[in-house]
Amino acid sequence: MTHNPPDDPVVALLRGAGCVFAEQEAAILREHARDATELDDLCARRASGQPLEHLVGWVQFGNLRLSVGPGVFVPRQRSLLLARTAVAAARARVSPLVLEAFCGVAPIAASVANAVPGVGLHVVDADDTALAFARRNLPGGSGIHLGAGLGPLPTHLRGRVDVIAAVPPYVPDSARGLLAPEARDHEPPRALLGGPDGLDHVTALISAAREWLAVGGELLVEMNTAQYDLIVRDGRAGPSYECSAVSGDDGQTAVARLRRTR
Ligand SMILES: C[S@@+](CC[C@H](N)C(=O)[O-])C[C@H]1O[C@@H](n2cnc3c(N)ncnc32)[C@H](O)[C@@H]1O
Picture 1: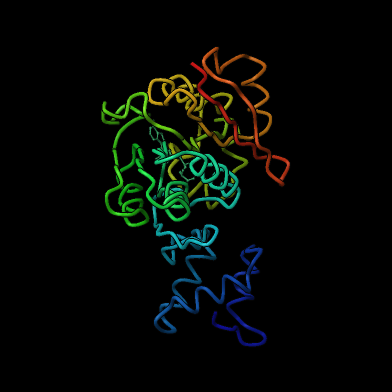
Picture 2: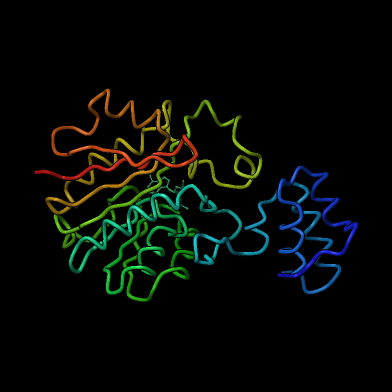
């Protein structure tokens, strides 16, 4: 990694703009810029609130460097919990078939591809810009499907998928104002917001997934812990699933684990 000079004006600019990791960001921008003019331009755009990952075109996700860019959701570090859970679930099966729904640039599918040789992969998203990045992040031969929910999946996958993993949009509509400006101003609202309690897409996915999962297959969905409690309390998973949760170290993130029992 490029080192920053002492009394670095780039670090000072980024810190003044509220960047918490100003030193690291300055080093990344310096490494990315081809000359001083481009560095000035990148710093100004970062200071105005554009996500670092949109500017440099990648995000570090575990041991993977994933392609990402303007107009799409940037994978969050908290989703490594879902990635690890999906890898473990896939490894527990012979010749697993794994689907990432609401995939964006496909961080979970890419993590599974990297850790589970021979896995069969499919991803779905309603945004073709996100899918263009997903295509770069996934091995050739992955099934990449454009459309809403699980609607565009090929019918031959019905009842055959071992693991469905998803980070659907799950921010309650009323919490939009609480989002970091990077997200609120630079990521598409439809990648973030999930209705009055944030669970519109989650609830629809739980209902749709049953048809695609093999019996014994698992639906793994990231949400916050309070939302998981709501799903269990309201019985939203229905009688076809056995429910449990994996909790993140941040005390907020949960991966709901719904195993299709019948
Ligand atoms: C929170 S982002 C998660 C993306 C990715 N899984 C990740 O963790 O980086 C949600 C994604 O859902 C997609 N999306 C929103 N509504 C959708 C729908 N009705 N059907 C399919 N995808 C949808 C958005 O385009 C976005 O890429």
